[in-house]
Length: 51
Ligand SMILES: [Zn+2]
Image 1 (cartoon, helix red, strand yellow):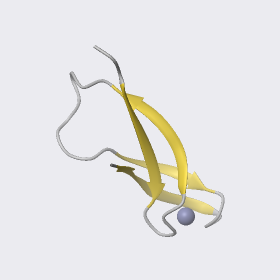
Image 2 (cartoon, rainbow, N blue to C red):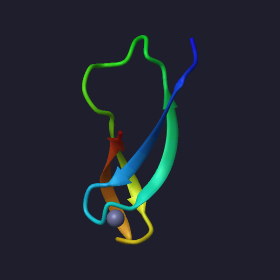
Image 3 (cartoon, rainbow, N blue to C red):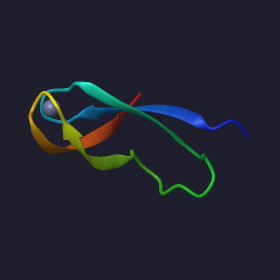
Image 4 (cartoon, rainbow, N blue to C red):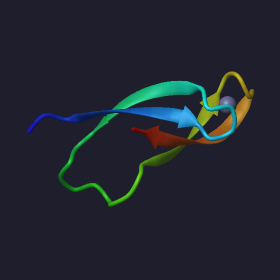
């Protein structure tokens, strides 16, 4: 099974700062959210998976 490529975008400025992969198996349901550093905002912001 290929891993699904996802983009993580800052929830404040909407910048797409990170690209990641996830397994379709063994992932919790719903959108992936990670707390990451946003260079544009200059602080750690929640980043959400984009479609
Ligand atoms: Zn930001």
